[in-house]
Image (cartoon, rainbow over all chains, first blue to last red; front, side):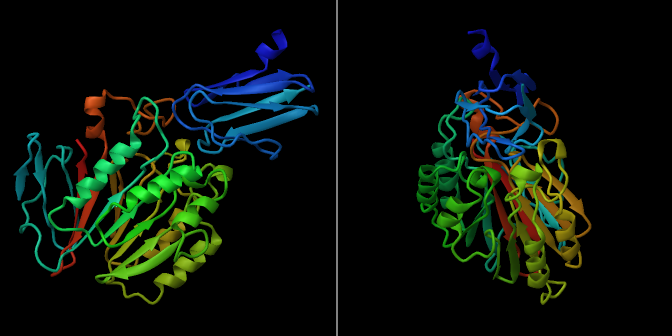
Length: 86
Length: 303
């Protein structure tokens, strides 16, 4: 499924890749932590949070409503990203 | 006084008036004044350990429990037992209940009669400190801050990680700052003050969150004192800075080293061969000399 493959964000070298991801309402985005360091995602609007993600751990969230969802790593403030839901 | 340890590194322990002298076991310090001698009766010894990150088990250090134990064994083997041990945070890696249980258990292996801790952001990021406080919060105020006196030294444990996840930097907050101002008010200027906290109070590298936004306000309350020593962890490497009568010391981790500011894409664990890892981990001994209050600080490595 192309859509599922696209709806993935890699966490590597303290960056979210892609930093901005476009999806459709109802899509599920999966983050995978490829760093050894712990990361913990949190939406700026509080709509989702991952808890601690150790290396190789994944977190998935389904976006039901269109909008732009900015998020960051609560442990590493330089790490920010956004999901744009159409 | 100079000593040469079994690895051939020169260790230098120096005293200088009423100021602070650092020594680094491992050769980082290039010069130091010859001092009056080593320890004597009545001196006040304590130890700082930091960033045990119990629960981390990746390649950079698959055995953080083992290296934490090695640090504790090193403390227990000191020729003069410290009267207290400070742990400056990131006791756990991912603030799980089992990690808190483990680190609380291993810290009980310390022979020193007293242990004081502050949390790191790894200890509080997901539950705002509930688990941390349930394990280590006894006797503290607010989010876990406290002060106490020992041997004429006033110790202040400050919590600067509770707002980290929303602010991207350390912060003390209004309630704690108000408490600190009141706490310090009755003390005479000549009282030696030791502040211990997790994130540096000074701006080491704000891009990585290595700063406390309102740290300057705390320092404003502290500047009148003749001797202020600020101890922190968080950045897993030894750095020092002097600002008037205030000296800042960041500490080694017992778990893994982190890159120097700005030298990597992020502050992730640095990887070294297993045989070399312990030369990047360490602990800190501190001694207030009884007769004149001089403070000596020795950073030593685990390997």
